[in-house]
Amino acid sequence: MERSEEQNRVRLMLWVLLVVYILNFLDRQILNILAEPIKAELGLSDTELGLLAGPAFAVFYAVLGIPIARYADRGSTNRISLISISLAIWSGMTALCGFAQNFWQMALARIGVGVGEAGCTPAAHSLISDAVPAQKRASAIAFYGMGVPIGSLLGLVIGGVVNDIWGWRAALMLVGAPGLLLALLLPVLLKEPRRFGLAKGEAAPSGPAPMPVRKAIGEVLTSRAYVLLLVAASFAAFLSYGKGLWTLSLFIRSHGMSTTEVGLIGAVTLGVAGVFGTWLGGWAADRFAKVNRRHILTLPAVGMAVAAPIQFLGYGAPVWWVAGLLILVPTILNAAYYGPAYACVQGLVRKELRAVAASVMLFGQNLVGLGLGPFVFGALSDWLQPLVGSESVRYVLFGAAWLGLIPAFFFWRASLRLNEELDQKG
Image (tube, rainbow, N blue to C red):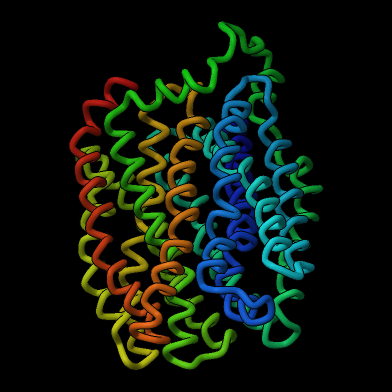
């Protein structure tokens, strides 16, 4: 009976955390589908639009994520309360984005979104790793990671439709509201697992004082497999965030589609495909790890290499539906890394450093990925515009497709070290 209750509690925790992460990415990524109308009303350049989508959010998210994660790793921290407060902050700031009258007001609101979201994923990964056995960790983290494509999917659909009916400001205010409500309900729905342990009579956490942040990061980076994963995941995020924003602009500019039409197409080619790819990556990792643990990273490495030429053809397709179909398969393959990569991260460090390890990975993914991806792609588009006109985004995406071979290489290199390093920590 107790085992059944524990399984139900873990299942509830996973579903609730998934909803939180859906809202996380819904609020973060809705700017992608609203980029063109925001640009038109506020008079922004592609470079300024890239700054709003990237650095304005990512710098504060990445920098604050590590100290917040160190706080989450403390035995006395209630991670549920931490996630609840974070959810309230980023949801409120998303709604405030709808009141922005110029670039700087929008930038400050986006910074607020980044500050709030910094407290979510490291604490969530730590919770999941405490509650789920190691042999099922990739699937569990991949389940949580499905919040990325689902949130992005909902952002595309809701943002596109609401923008065409009531405008981009209403869309931002609308998507911020549910998070404020869930932030109030979260402490009621979930309880901190550490406190369950104490309720059963376990001794209170004891031992040496918490390790300083710098020393904790130093220990995490002693793992060569972890460093290779960090490089691979950061570059994968750079391409994902950059392509995610500007692929939508490609459909609007080059194929003459409305935000509603692009939102629905993106929901399938980026959203549904991303959900399936994220699930597939976690399932394959747990399955193939039974044969050899290095194969946890086989699908991310091979998949990204295969995706590159197909994606290149998709960006060059002259008809929108052909482009959508060709982009579908690479999206599945490129999304498969999330569960395997973060499951490896949780196994390559001591339990006391799991949230920090996740936050350092997120630091790289968001500072390099979200911070630079949309911005660099936008700056390159502005640079190419005098040469190729409105097709500048297409040419930027041509190059981005082939750059997917770089994270594929680093995922393969990391896989070669997995058995040795997981044995050391296991």
